[in-house]
Structures are given as C-alpha cells and as structure tokens.
Length: 156
Image (tube, rainbow, N blue to C red; front, top):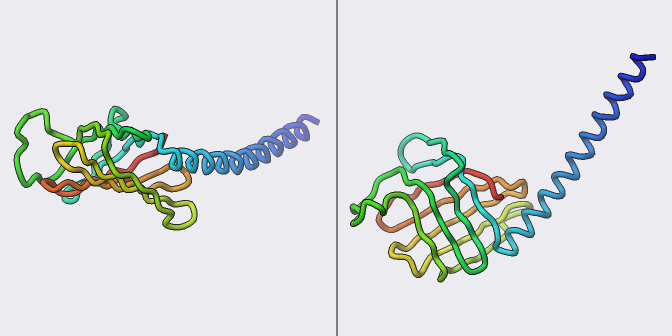
C-alpha cells in the first residue's frame, strides 16, 4: 500500500510540475511583452562579451534601467578606446539620459529588437537590445570612441 501511495504521489508531482512549467512560460511571455511595450524594465548583465578578448562574468551590481522618460546605464567596459577619457570617472558605460530615441520592432515570433540612442549625453550611445520571450537578452553598446561591446543577461 505504501508503494502505491508513493507512486501516486510521484506521478501527481510530476504532472503538476509539467503543467506548472507551461503556465510559467506563458506568464513569462506575457510579462516580457508588457515590459517591452510599456518601456519599463531593467536589464541585468551576467556576462560581458568584448569585441576582442575573453568573455567576463559579471556580478549583479551592473544594470541598464529603462523607463518611458529615462535610460540609466551602469555597465563595465572591456575593449579598446580610440581616445582617452578626460576624467578617470569616465571609465565604463555610465550615463543617465532623458532625451533619447526608443524604438521596438518584432524580429520574429518571440523576439524583439529594441533600439535606443541617447541625445543628451556627453558621449552618444547607440544601444541595441535583443530580447527573447523567456526574458534573456543581448545588449550591444556602440559609441564613436570605443569598440562595441555586448552583454548577455536577463530582463527583470
């Protein structure tokens, strides 16, 4: 009798985990759609992918915060700079922009391309965010005086 009860318990748990995961994926897709369309989310990079060199694992203190009226970036930079920064505080990719272009385009089912270009920062940044329906994304940052750098992470 104990074996029968254990088998039923395991089967029930297995079935509930399967059905729960499909609901979870649907909820994740709905959540990502709402975040991208409302322009209110935070990208947390997990890995930096410089143009030349090795990938670098990152901690969770870095982010790109996007809202309807502000983009705020605090990201590291690994790569070649074509001109030296004037201030030692200009290392990395750090800015807050309230004047920017923001456009979203569907690339294919479940993927979005988000293009952002700052207008009011000292250095002009072009950010391309490719977001999957599961919440994972790749951010590519282009600037005139540096090699491009990409980040892989998750939308929160």
